[in-house]
Image (cartoon, rainbow, N blue to C red; front, side):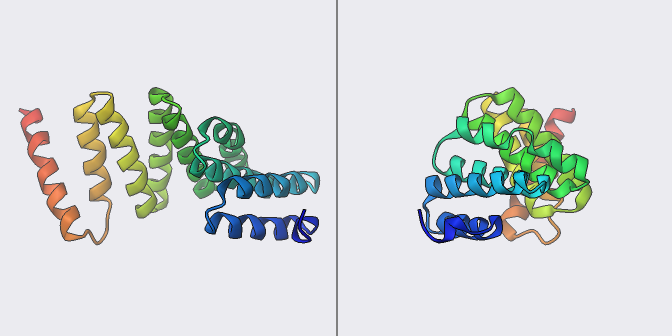
Length: 182
């Protein structure tokens, strides 16, 4: 045990973030869990939920979607009750990623769709684009071609300053959608 790990939950949070940046995802997850436990004991439920969410992301990076899902599950509700819609959306997207990695396509699509609505409402264009790309990919894998095309088009239309590549893709996506409308 390092000297750092004996400190406050904020110190543990920073230690975990440093471990994450260094690519030590498993160890980062362990330290995020310790920070979460200390925040929870101190009655700081939102900070504990944030640490559990970070723990889940670390576990996803460590290719452990099952434990990641367990860490993340329920954090979205805590953020909802606290009125923090951005963190709620991020928690939903993280939960969806874990579900996707576990092969649970339908629940993943549902969680990604919920997160996309939140990001759209908040004007979080980058998060909306990432979430919509994941949603589109899942719909494509489940052979929901129109849904995949629509999700990607919707995401690209939300980009305020699209790159040349994004503009081209958006124009290409409009072709099949026009054909489907016939």
